[in-house]
Length: 125
Image (cartoon, rainbow, N blue to C red; front, side):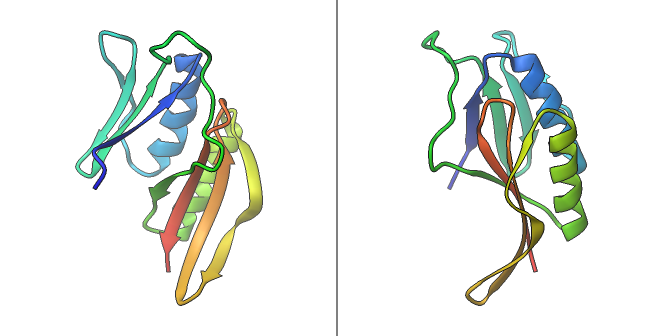
């Protein structure tokens, strides 16, 4: 359904450092800059990008929006969370751990990136 997700960042270098760390835990290669200074993380399942807003206004986060990243183990969820906190992110909501959502059992961790975007690492049990 989705081809890509793009987030705004006033300081693309600081955001790249954060996302290189958290996505690196998941085995995603370091983000690469294009000629316009945007950063892209490309995988077989989609593209994640960072860019200064093209309208010239300040970057802001989406209230109610979350970008979720799939993990293949609870340990990677925890490592994603810890890498994020160590690289300018803020832990939010409950600590990393198991949540039961009806019949689904999920291991989740939520962070805000340096610009306030809400991200989540998720492992389906």
